[in-house]
Image (cartoon, rainbow, N blue to C red; front, side, top):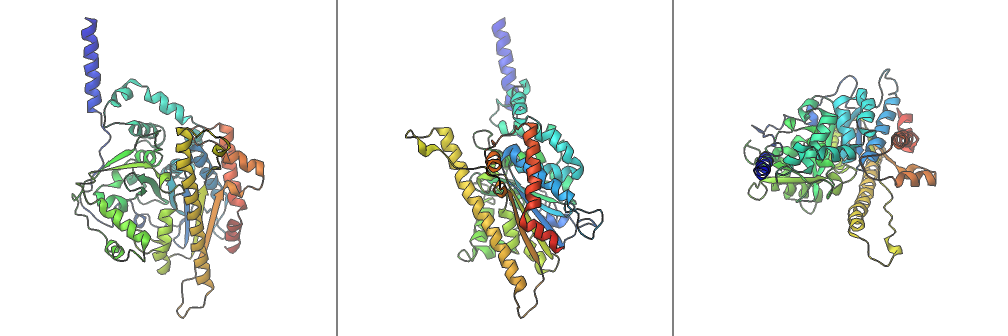
Length: 448
């Protein structure tokens, strides 16, 4: 009798597990380049003008990154826009590009605005998210669902984030509201940034407006080994997608426009559903840990769905402020002190963190070069008048701390989804202080 009961229970578990599946990727009925979650559909308001373009990027780094970026948002809200009573720089934030831990802050702020900042500290920053994930993982129904090969740890994480933070919200709930958020993951096959924008979803004939915020955040923070990749379904030619004109132009000038050429090639890979019927996404930090890649493209090219450079050329933008919030740690290693080769955990940490740190520094340097280019054009005397545009590139990172011991303390905080509340408070405070004391930020305020 007991054997029969055990067999029946096992069959029931297997049946339920076999039915479990990750949520379907919403399809796009008809491709329309002016419809969906795009910057063009987040118009300026009386509190947010196009003439002042404020762009933020939030790096990866778990709760450490989420808290540091929250401190920056709070400091912007304490900074009044001169001559504009009742308005702060937080009202003027137009774009937030985020990665991994920073994506929690970006998505929550985009959904709830300044009124949600206090709740975010309670609901996420002071929450032991790691323990919650483990606890939920042991729930009977979750265990059963994980028996399915089509339901994995990333789907479990997305469900946890949805229940705790996002309440079934989708990108469609953000249409018409600024800031536009660009949540970044990494395309596992291409090793390139995959941004949750409708422009990125178009070649998949997928509808971002119906896509849950929780799943985008989960993909952005799906660190290899801890969480499995998030899977998207490629709907192929179901919507009549046509590649925009810049793609063909980019393919013709591989030697001149290297970045545009690679973007065009990557976009076309999604059109081959025989080779790519599915797209698997990992932690966005594997491709760009500070979320600066989409911003650099917008500042230096007029191609694509949205372009700050195009807006500048049209006379819409007169001042650009880019604030990079980089919660990087000190990547120095002590492996060379020992003769014994490092273990697999240390090897994985080094392989991931060291190249990412180097790439992030190169991206910030490129941003500074863009800033210098704007300054040269502003001070030049061309034969034809150019729009007068002021550019401010600001980096908020622990490198900005003068006190060596304080800097070392923050640079050695772990990358996890659990930090003590007092450490969270310190991170939010230092995020605001680093922005407030940044030389370029002070120059910005002086020029208003």
